[in-house]
Image (cartoon, rainbow, N blue to C red; front, side):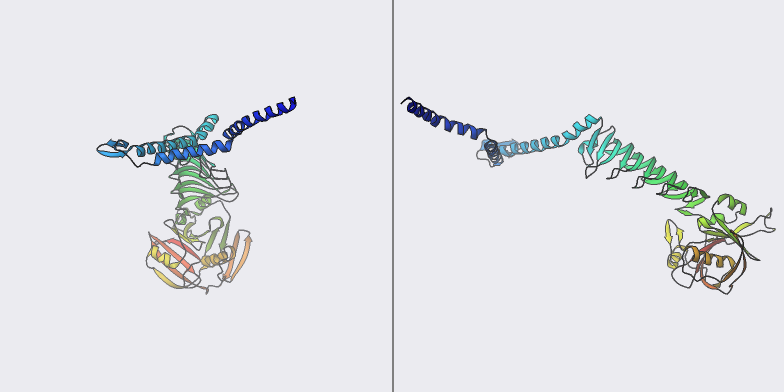
Length: 407
């Protein structure tokens, strides 16, 4: 009897408590809270964005204009939400930057425009693109620029996001490319240019990113081969004209080969793709040989920063030819034709020539085919005669020579 009464009482209590417990569980569940929260927020913004005024008191009067009170509040709320989101987005950056002792900004961050101290700048994909000085929202001062792989691209001075004054440029491999003066991202002033294997290629003056002025060329091993003048990346071969053989020897330290017959001689300067001929008689006070003609062993001509390879391009640069036509080769031209065929794969038929080696770098020419014919184009400019030697009349040339008009 007592047990039955207890069970009845317990059942009655459970019947009263179970709905309460169920509601508490429902009210404290995350899904219910999220659903109710979203519903409340939706209702709030629905009400907020329902900007249609229903009464004259629902307007603000602004300079004679009536503006809906609800619309004004909606604009303020939306602006506030956007501001809070922006501050939150940069908060992590600023906090982590302070921990490292240097601030880090995204490349397009508005806050970067107000930075004045040393900073870090992240690139578009999130990599560290720059670390150094900034001013007025630009990279100005001393700093280091990186590529997406983390390799240093440039280290030195900047001015308004450009390389300026002294700095060092690197290849993508991390090997130093150039160190010296810059102007608006270009090599300009004195500097050193390196090959990607790390060897020094050139040391001297630059202008607008090109070798220009006095400088020194080096071979792949970093050995000095030539000291002289350059213009727009081209060696000024005309500067050899009139020099004594001893002066050429002082300027050129590379490999050379001497060819000689009964009447002429020619010296090939292998490392700068040139050959010179000369004279040495009563016209020289000390009887030294002087350079009277330079043959440039290239099938291209540098002019004004451009590389000309066709006769049409030459005509546009020089103007009309002083002479064009067939010509039988002389000894230096025969040597040049054969040298180009052996070393430059010119494809031009070689001149029959009988050579007698005296030493490895000294050859005597016993005879050659003097009836071998080429087609030449000759131009005059600035007191010099430029003669371009072609295998046949056509669009391209094999090499060219330079001599003075009075010569």
